[in-house]
Amino acid sequence: SELYRLQGWGAPYFVINSQGHLCVRPSGSAEGTDEVDLVAVIETLAANHIHLPLVLRFPDILHHRMLELQTCFSLAASKFNYKQQFQGVFPIKCNHERHMVEQIVECGFGLEVGSKPELLIAMAKLGSRAGRLLICNGYKDSAYVNNVLLAQRLGIHAVLVLEQMEELEEVISCSNRLGVRPILGLRAKMSTKHNGHWGNTSGDNSKFGLTVNEIVAVVHQLRQEGMLDCLQLLHFHIGSQISSILTIKEVMREGSHTYCELARMGAPMGFIDVGGGLGIDYDGTKSQSSASANYSMQNYANDVVAALMDACLLKGVAEPVIISESGRALASHSSVLVFDVLSASHYPYHSVTLNIDNLAKDAAACLMIDEECLVQVYSSMEVGNAQEAYNDAKQLREEAGSLFKLGCLSLEQRAQAEALYDCVSQQMLTFAPQLSDELRLSLAATYHVNLSVFRSAPDSWAIDQIFPIMPLHRLTEKPTTLATLADLTCDSDGKIDRFVGASGDISSVLPVHDLHEGEPYYLGLFLGGVYQEVLGSAHNLFGSTHVVHVRATGDGRFLIEHVLPGQSVGQVLCSTHHADLGLLHQLRAQTDAYVMSGDLSQEEAHMLMANYQHCLDSYTYLSSWPNLDRKE
Ligand code: PLP
Image (cartoon, rainbow, N blue to C red):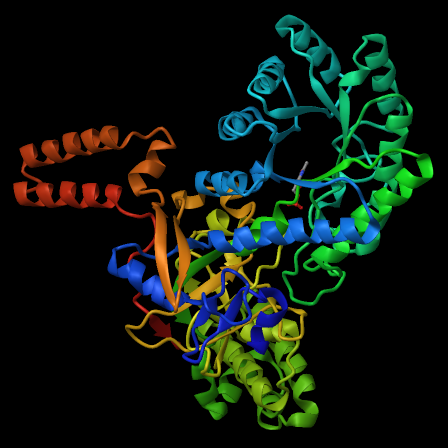
C-alpha cells in the first residue's frame, strides 16, 4: 500500500485485506466491521451482466463526511463559545445525481444552485422541508428570480445572492410584481488571493462578486428603496481546493469584517456563507501542494469560527449562522471509478538480443561515425558511465533521424540506430535504476484501459489534476511493471501519465502487475466523486458509465441499492440528433437496395441488421478483455 500512498489519501475509508483486495470501510470505522471487498462487488455485478467501466458509489461515506463536517463545526463552536449554529449547503453543480442530492437533503443539508435547472431540482427537493436553506448564486434572469421568490412561499429559506449590480433592478421589479419581499445576500469579491488552480475565483480581477464600492452602493440603494431589511447574508468563495490554511485564515478575516460592517450599516444580516474551498488530500502528503491541503477539517472549522468570533467581539455584532458550500470535501471520497485493462504494450525488449556486430557494421557505415564508438557505447556500459552512455545513444539516434530525412540512411539502417538506443535505455534499468522521469516514461509499458478519460476523469486531461489510481487486487504480489494508461479514445490526450508517487511526488508511471491471459485486471480511480461525472464529455461518443450504489450490511456483506445504467450506443447517438430508428431505416433502405441488385444475400442482410441493432442497444465501452500482452 506504501507504493500507492493508500494510507495518505485513503484513510479511513480504503484498506487492503489479507487476500490483497482493495476494500472500502464506508463508515470510516477502524475495526472494519462494515468492510466491503471491491472485487466481490465487481464480480457480483458481472454475474448480473453489469460490466466495467462503472462508478461505485458509497452513500455511507457521503453520510460520514457530512456528519464529520457538522461535528467539526459544533466542536469549534464549543471551543470558542460561539453562540450560533452551522448549516451546510451542498453545491448541486458538484454532482447532480438524484439519489445523491436526496440523501444530502435527508441528512439536514440545504442546497446551493447556480442556474435555472439546478434551481428547479432544489425547489422540488426542499419544498417539503420548511425552513431549509436554498442559496441562489449565478447569473439570474426574471424567470430565475421569480422562481426563487415563489420558493419562499413554499417555506424554503431561499436567498437571492446578488453577484452583479444589474441584478438588483431585476430583483426589485420581480418582487414588486409578485408582492413577495426577497431574502437577499451579497457575494463579495475578496482581495485575498488563493494560488491554486481554482484561484482565479479570487483577487480583484475575479469573475464573480461585488467590489467594496459596489457593496456600499447596493446597501445605499436598498436603503433608498426601503429594502435594507431584506439583506440577511454575506457570501464569498475564493475558489476550490484551497491548499494552505493561511489563505483560509486570511479570507476569513476579510469576510468576517465585511460581515460586521454590513451589520453596522444597518442590514439585519444573520448569515455568513463562507463558500466552498475546503481541500482534500489527493496526493496523501498533507502539504501545501495543489493536490493536497495542509490542514484537517477540524483546523478549517476552528479557523472559520475563531475569525468570526474575533470580528464579532471587536465590532459588537451578534454571531451569524455559519453556512458552508463545501462540495469537494463532502462527496469526493464516496465514488470509486472501476475499470479494466484490455491489453498492454511493453517497451521493445527484443532489442537486447540484437546482433551487435551487424549493428555496428550497418549503422556505422551509413552514420559516418567510428564503428568502434557505436559498439562501445553499448558494450562498455557500466554503473559509473551509464548516464553518459545513454546521452551518447540519444545523440546517435537523433543524428540517425536527421540522416534519414536527408536520404542518407535506409529504413533498416535507421532501425539499427534505434535499436542501439533501445539497448542502452534497457541497460539503464540495470545500471542506473534511479531513472530520470523522462527515461522512466519512455521505458514504461502502456496499459490500454476500458475507459474514456474525457468522460470519466476530465480534470485529469483538462487541468492535469492528480487522482489516486491503483490496482484493486493482487496487492499481496509485488508489481513488476511500470505503466502509463491509454484510454479508448482516438486522441493522444486520452491518457493518464501523472500518478501519486510512493514518496508523495508526482510520478509519470504507475506500478502494475503483468497481465495474465484470460484474467481481468482491475484498476480504481479514487476521490473523483465531484465534478468528474458532471464535466465529462462524449468524445468519440463514449457515453456515461453505469453508476452503482453500494451499502455495507456488515460481516463483509453488501447490498446493491441502485443501478443507474450508463448510456447505450443508441442513447448517445440520440443526443447527437441521430435518432436510432432513423439510422435503422436508412440502413434498411441501403441493404434492401443491395439485396434487390443481388449484391447482398437475404441472410447477410439479416445478419447485418441484427448486428447493427445489437450494437445500438449495447454499452459504448468494450465488453471483453483480450488481455494481449504485447512484448514486441
Ligand atoms: N460555491 C461556489 C460558488 C463555487 O463556485 C464552488 C466551486 O468552485 C463551490 C461552492 C464548491 O467548492 P468546493 O468543491 O471546493 O467545496
